[in-house]
Image 1: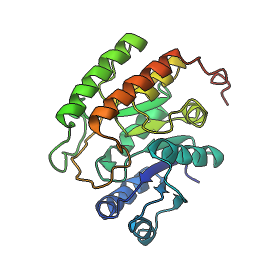
Image 2 (image 1 turned 180 degrees about the horizontal axis):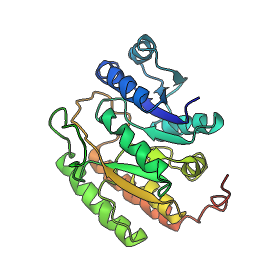
Image 3 (image 1 turned 45 degrees about the horizontal axis):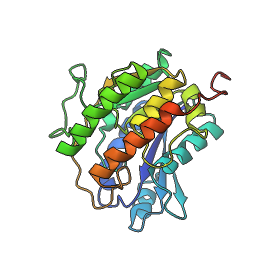
Image 4 (image 1 turned 180 degrees about the vertical axis):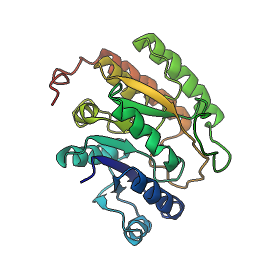
Length: 251
């Protein structure tokens, strides 16, 4: 029985999944991890592609959005007793070869949440990137820079990549993200602020991220300007929200 679950949110990724899944299965085997895809009511052939690659999949009957999709994976991991969860997007943007670094950091028991940052130097990796790296569009980079400073002011922590979807959790963090305080649409900087406010230990590690051309983005289903506005609103809500009372009930 593996203690590690890799969750992959999927929505209309049929064109991109074949490039990711063989590499993901290979890297998951190296760290003895199980893979769970959460299909958020895809209307293309994503489910068939996942089945063809023998990926265990849960499917939503209607589209619920990115936050609810990954929380489906969190609740599955909690129910079936996994100690560690690592999530990466189904579009191939995140390099699966970095999975072992996430698990290594989580097993040190010094951090509850590991965030993969495209902005940290990856000099420690024994493998080079597979192609050009992705740092975001101009609007996205401006938003990321603003989020960094807002998080610094509100939490006294400098997070280099507050919009990363490449994240690892231990059991304590997993219990927290299964609760009601986790954002249900596009959790990013607001989720990080909520983690820090509730005493979860957050650390960043370098990862490789690649550009992906997508017709339907699960992780970013809103326009870039509205996305930035939305995150600022969510940061304010996260800041004024009361601390969770049940976080200290650790098992």
